[in-house]
Image (cartoon, rainbow, N blue to C red):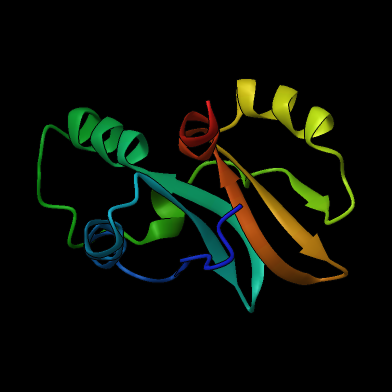
Length: 114
């Protein structure tokens, strides 16, 4: 689990989210609003929008315009064997304690331990 969770606000420009992903070498990040996770943005969602619009200029779009569903959120005590099936259908899982984000587990994290 990565304890440092990089996020972007849903009202941020897509270009800012892209810069954040590049800066930290991430392919996807959770999207927040008022500190709560409300969606996700990924390289795939950005590229899909570029193809759909046939335009690489995303400067007018906000993250909320292209964000996808939020990643599943699980309690810190959830066993790994319950998390693994979720990663079959999701790019990441958020680990929380009450309403506080403790970390994120991605498919890439699993490859590191294989």
